[in-house]
Amino acid sequence: MKGKYQKLGIAAFISLLVSPTALANDWVVRPYIGMSIMSDLSGQAEQVETQSGAVDVNLDSGFTAGLGLGYQFSKQWLVELAWEYRTNDSEVTLPDGDTFTDGNYASNLFFLNGIYQFNTSSPWSPYLGAGISWAQEIDIDLERDGMEQSFSGDGEFGDQVFAGTNYALSENWAAQFEVRYGSIGDIPLEAEGTPGRITGLDYKTTTVQLGLAYRF
Image (cartoon, rainbow, N blue to C red; front, side):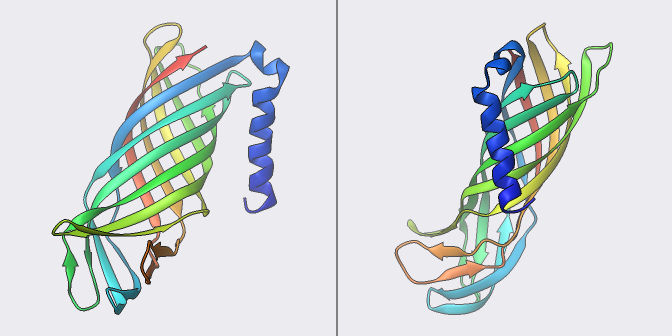
């Protein structure tokens, strides 16, 4: 979905929040933490440290944490609004081979998700989901010898798909295991406070996470 369809989807979720009938149904809140996995990237530097040309970004496994608020409008279907912070350590090599060995590639994202839950007679309850993501901020920091230069961008939409399972701990509590894949297209990252930009870095993430779900 693009443009007006994304706005309509967000508006529909907000209407659920303020609808009086929503109070008669189940809400679910779920905090989670996980491991962030990203592949190495190549992009283009424009006047970064006075250099222009190919830039390489090597990424380590990182950390993610998030919080979702969902409204279950049937036994199988749930709609969720979620927030997530993610960071991966990075090593950036500029066109002339100059390397910044410290730094990180990080994001602050919001999601509108649809989740289908499979009903079972056991404590295990698998689910599938998909959603729209919006980047409040994506940035990459180039750090070396105590000096830091940041490049950031925002406002782009993307998507994600995920699969997981609940394990019922009680009537209201469940533990969760989930695997997710997300993608946001190239966001131009503009230097903060100095000239320069980095382009061509797609933001594609894989997450393995654990969480808790509380129904109220």
